[in-house]
Length: 35
Image 1 (cartoon, rainbow, N blue to C red):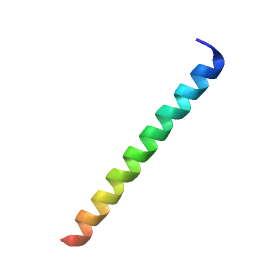
Image 2 (tube, one colour):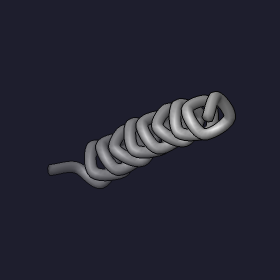
Image 3 (spheres, one colour):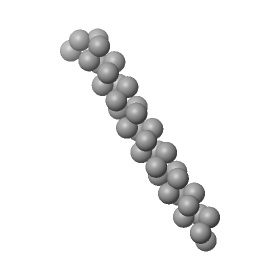
């Protein structure tokens, strides 16, 4: 693989992890506030 491809894949995975964590955190906060 090219270095650019490795960098792009790493950034893509980090973005997906960040969005997933943020989404889960928001849902958790909303669920906690309702109780």
